[in-house]
Amino acid sequence: VQLQASGGGSVQAGGSLRLSCAYSGSYHSISSMGWYRQAPGKEREMVARMTIRGDTNYAASVRDRFTIARDTAKKTVYLHMNSLQPEDTATYYCTVDAFENGKGWSPGRSFSSWGQGTQVTVSS
Image 1: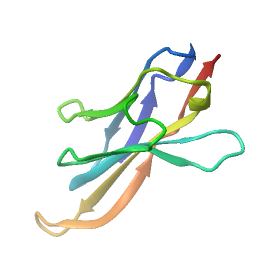
Image 2 (image 1 turned 90 degrees about the vertical axis):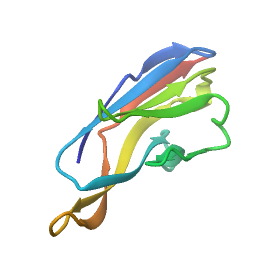
Image 3 (image 1 turned 90 degrees about the horizontal axis):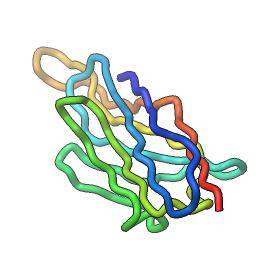
């Protein structure tokens, strides 16, 4: 699965951005998708995840400010970010967990794909 993230940019504190991640390629099915971020000098951390059933999970620091969503028809995952703060500054990565095509109609092995990252900078 190939992922193309977009939508990053520079905003002032309190502003909003919407990140998009378009996925494509050959796969049997997708099990979950998510957004992670990595700030300079810090480890990559989970921001938001969504299962294919629609169950969501958010980092405590972004809950009530960020929303993960998907458009299955467009094969796109979104991250709506509101009330952005300087501590949200990071490179944001999208990821998809999927199954390879197996024998016949069955799923094959599971795998994860990552996008190239999009920079979000929030100034105070």
